[in-house]
Length: 260
Image (cartoon, rainbow, N blue to C red):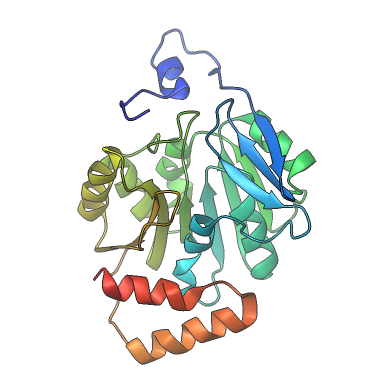
């Protein structure tokens, strides 16, 4: 599983004539009150606690919200890679003034999120786009349009992001507002980690990694514009996040300070 492999999507898109990509099957499992999303393998692509469907069940998913330390009231949030719709749902519920856009290439994932993971129907605030994330960030209509990007792009192997080039991250940067932040889910023990960090540092003014969680995930925060460090203000913001959402924001801050 540590050998670098092209994703099914990449292999199919490289063939000519162009045709609709093939995907690994979308499968489900349940254990101890938690429903898991898989792409035909044992790798978990997302999770939902049945009694708390809008709560980010997995620790790395909670860390993907660490941008909240810096941005209190986002106007527009984009999720690249829908997964089990965890972050899309949480952002949609938590920020009622924000426009939330989810980008997912696999129509089956969108369908299973609606039927089995309680993804809300689209409305004036929520859009779910069936398209390639690269096409989305390259679209001139999205330039400077988002305060937050959340990037979680994995195929069935689930060991390295499908999109990981400097050009991709440059396009992500271009989609952000001047004070915008992108969070990215990586695997710390995989060869793709160093490649992604190098590409992010090429594209962004500042990159900070949170400590690795028990499943090996490492969440990187990418800042379009480097922020001035104000420990007291960040500590107050972390306490407010904990009080309002129960997300472990104090541990995010501690981890970011340790990794600077």
